[in-house]
Image (cartoon, rainbow, N blue to C red; front, side, top):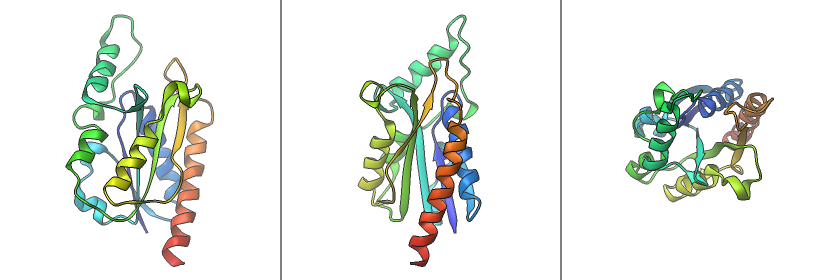
Length: 178
């Protein structure tokens, strides 16, 4: 089984979660974890499962303006934020706009501030809609992984992401053989 974990990350938290999901999936699958700018249609066609995630910006999936605002925030004097090397270029919303109709199994995740979802929004819901719009069968409810106000993953979120990867691998294994 082949799995592809595609992420958009500005400050590194979503990248860490993508890696953890990949680790969980790797227990039963060949896994590639890549930034969205490297996610070609050929890679998608070869995967049995595609897991797509990004940070929650302005209650949803990032836009060019929110990505720029995140980069600008990191450049402010006194900021401790560091923009991820993979952050430049295409975001998930732009990437989805380049995709044709696809098929296959998929799942979505996001990172968001540790506060009730009605206050923060959830990019994973928008990612799920975009996956379905492009023909993917979404195999599970979207997941959110939480970040502190100081822009660090909450304790145990990487472990929870790895465990979710294990659950996804088991689910896809059952769907593939059943």
